[in-house]
Length: 211
Image (cartoon, helix red, strand yellow):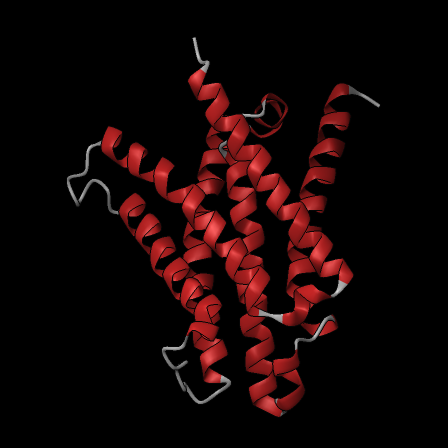
């Protein structure tokens, strides 16, 4: 196998694994149903399932976002830093769409009946905070110049907000649904949490010890 063919083969494997992660997240609500789905039928059940799918795909893409900016040399050799950051930007916009679509679909399954202000619904309120935070991150990133935000200020805000967004998204996902009581989804969530911790630790350690 020539060097170029090997390069294409490795890229195909990486893209295939990334696609498999997204597909696994998308299918999870259909194969590992939470109790809330037991009482839904027809359109309401479909809305709830697709709403859960939107949320889980958004979480997986948030993990990928950290990979895109982690400056792994082998990824930059395969795809180039410019390509990775372009995908990072587009993926952020797509995540914001999913973050809005997730609660709209979930609430639509219940006729847009909002949760009462009770402590037992704290995972749902964490989800609402996550949506607002994601929208804020994406809108400020896209319209930074129009908002007259200096690049250094934006970078500082971005570096503070993105770990928080990833953390609260994972907390919301883990506690809002019984889906993660099943062993396979629980293992996937544990893997995602571990990946986020390791990736962010690597990023910030490199920044601290950067020459």
